[in-house]
Length: 70
Image (cartoon, rainbow, N blue to C red):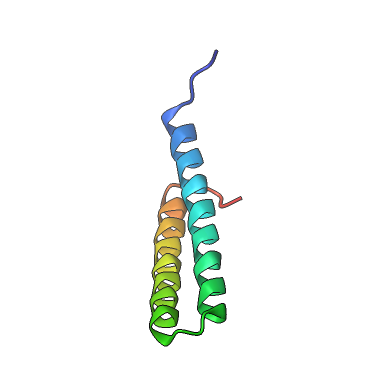
């Protein structure tokens, strides 16, 4: 059984983090669009914006390590 290199581990971890963050962002956007309560709508909108910022940070780090998103 072969072991993963540090590079492969980093690559896999970054891609998994991006995938999960994109899923989270889409879920919050959906809730933002479909919830009537304005306080909750605002909260889920903020969550979606936070996810977007994290995605930008992750993709910037991936560029620094020369990791392709897909």
